[in-house]
Length: 168
Image (cartoon, rainbow, N blue to C red; front, side):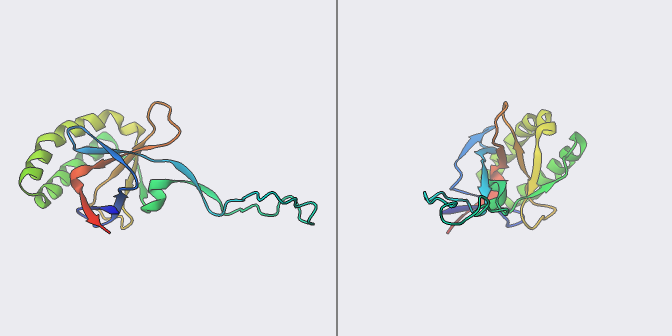
């Protein structure tokens, strides 16, 4: 299994259990999330509760909740939405911090393509939910989530160069 950690904060943000598609010249990874039910699930084993003295509510779990699989698995923390000014300021700081951690070809590729990826993201800001890793580190990567064209499940965007692959 492969885990992908935030290169700046060390938080686990993704794993190979969630396939990705590289977009924007490989700068962004697009990952499909899913709403799932977390908690005990009532399984019908074919028994007749009324014949066995049970009542109708038996087996119902009030603890079951709907969560987004990626958010729940990696304990992502939602942040307030960024406006254009705040997002551009974040990106400038992020580019500077991440560029210092990248070397050689990766650094050149990142610097060459990050501006285009940022321009791709700017018009979509109003549609995004913003997440950070569990530690909520100020300098870490941000994970963006949005709903594509009326989809019921969210799509997540990761900055690929900000992820470090770790084998488990």
